[in-house]
Length: 378
Image 1 (cartoon, rainbow, N blue to C red):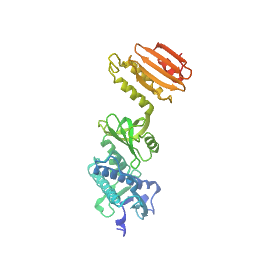
Image 2: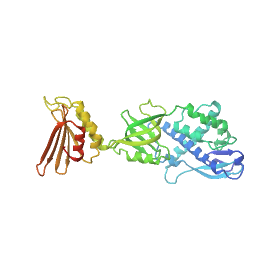
Image 3: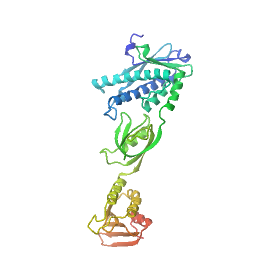
Image 4: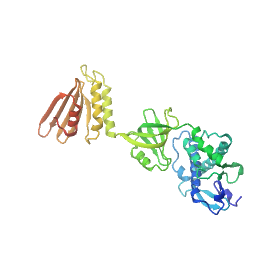
């Protein structure tokens, strides 16, 4: 064992004809990155499992796993790695906890690889992200090449990743639950940059959505649509995969799209209309009528267009069962009343000149939209 072997984070050795020359082939350097990613994913699993009351990782947890390649030993390619503590960014208590978890993750990975070689079974306690990361280890090697990884001090705590193990790793995805495509609709209420994840509040509850490290555009979308107060934000649709779509609060992985489906303005108008739909006859006295569903449906159909007008519109009922749209354009007070019996009433009242324009007609969506967009009654 090297004099300073105890200082290294892990034993890592690449064997095969290509690795007999000095240094390390450039196209296999990615294996150090694959190893780091797999250990970090498992470390995240371990921390979340050990903190069941927490939904996200502590700030800085991912960044603190700063694995540094300091040299490559001669003979077989043996990259020497140390775990570097970020200066001034992690407290002593955090570092003691996290560095222990990183080491446990290394050993958990080693134990799992040894178990895979014996049983040909996937590690059932791993998250889908950890399974996918583990499958990448050794993916760049040729058939006759191997990797040995594990504890830098104990030979027994090391695993050999040869062709047979790599073939099992390739099959692992078929043994774990097949990810199911799913769409979630709701409001993004939390965003965690350290773990590249966010939470979305849906009608069924809260779901956690996790992004890959290179999905910067989706991370920006998640932050753009975030409800900083937990309420005020556009409704979004998130598309991705989940291992079990039957759960109430599912976890979404491999997110592929985040798109706004209802603006804040549209949601406000829909909320006004929903309150009107809940009215019963007699809501404003014994003879007052609640709007019929067909009247509310006609209003709902034009709300997406209303939300784009850039004008504050109020939706209010009247005692005759009509629903009124009211807004102001300069000195002109505008009113459109969708009434029972398939009627439409339009009114433009110029408060500066007292000029009043009115029209009563059979309901026409075209006429209503024309009045909403440019104030024309004909």
